[in-house]
Image (cartoon, rainbow, N blue to C red; front, side, top):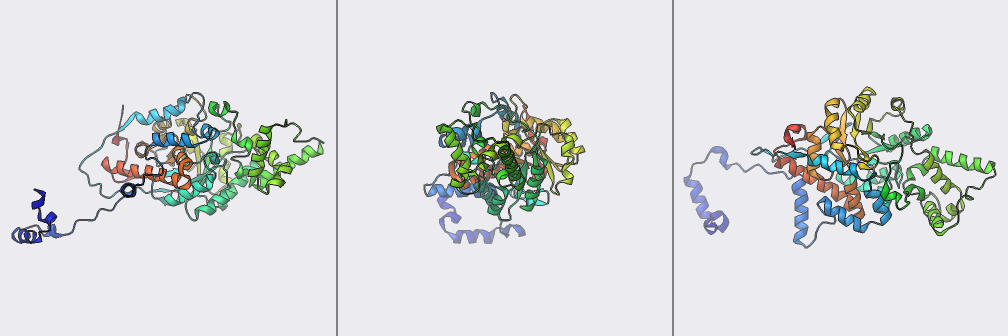
Length: 462
């Protein structure tokens, strides 16, 4: 009976007597080695400890509930932009199906008491192989947008990849992060001066890498946005990186001057309506400067029109990529690679990293899943550059599978954006902490202790 156990009843006399009459190995009296809790145990303790006080997590710990609650909280236009995909959503489904085809095969009776989740990327040792991926127009889901995300990433200690389509400038985001790691994601404009200006600014704010997005040289066919006639950039949302840029604003003013010289009125083409007035207010409120002055100025409207015309370049080729070495000292990654031959071209171009991605299924309907592409690309890369995975990552077990199949790290997108919608900075932070926590526990429970141990042998394909 448990009550007869002296260690439980407080009867230390019996315990001492037993120890005096029993010969034990010399090392048996040594205190047990302390178990150092990893991110999984720490996060569990926080949540369960709060539960004792009657508190539940601000954001759900499973993706389906997180998504459902975020959808209820979000406004219609915001949800359409954040959750929508290309066409019928086949590529979004393919991303998840690709993860589902791989199953983890746990191994038993291995010492997993100490686990190392760290990974080194471009001279920085990160506490976990997870990054906050670039997400445009985040203010559609929360007014603090990029600033809240930057603070969340800094709190976790992993990089935030500043997006070109931001609602706050990279300078403002960097200031909110302190010394925390940050990268910059570049959309290649039709104006090379804007490209060079963005790259110089990224380096000036301490970015540790530049990620060139290749799969958005044109906007994909996105029915959820199209059915609402909703493009956030046309309302001045998601263009703060541009309106904070000296070269971009120089182009805007040149265009205004050219229109004035031609004797045209840039506002003459806009039919007065309540919707048009709301759009004008939205544009003016987000443009640098005072609201009243912006409502009278042609610059805010001209900035939106200029952005829509030059933000991305369909004529981008490998020849342009090869010019990057002369434009920036930062490590260069190419995001959007899905074919092994393109991975070979990237390696030939001397890039420092590849991000296997289909833009979260937002660009091409019916494309292959991101993880399926990784399986084909990893043997081509074979350690010659850093290899990251984006698109479809939802859980810690997804992180495990991606790393076992060759990725060095993963980018998170929609999950933290949904956390942002529910609880701002804390929501974005906790969603990524939850993913890291689950990855830590999955790693140990599957019999592994470090990222370097993970290979395809940890998985089985159905």
